Length: 179
Image (cartoon, rainbow, N blue to C red):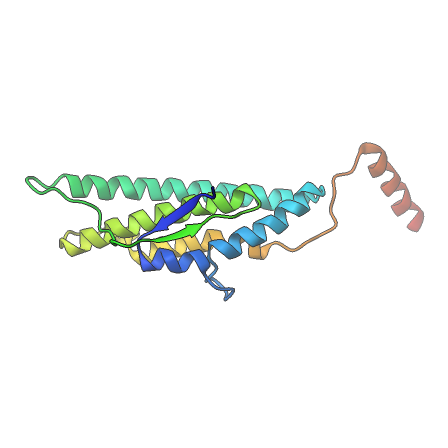
């Protein structure tokens, strides 16, 4: 049994597949490039390992930012006296099977799920005519998600591997003989 991701908004659904155009990458492209990065890191490419750490940090920061936005929107929607609000929802969400070779694809799916939920909250707030803070626009939420999905695109393979002290010493000796 494969895990599935349910997405309710068209914007989040389009972010699942995305495109290879600059700045328009989706979850599938992110997962593909992260698999390449992971393979390079397993082959002791320190540049790839460092890049993965940056991406993990960006994923975590973006999810935390989304959680704060979610809390503010939830508080705003639940503070209405006498009105019970349910998040806007599509009666027929699209279901996407998640088949990723690394954990990073799943981490991206969590981010996309959070994004989808916040987009639904924003739609409900707008529908009800409530004020929406500037940092909570649909464009900003989508851009935050796409920035993270596009990060692996900026990694370029190098042959950098960690050296043992003995290898490092031999390398210095070789450089000295060249001088």
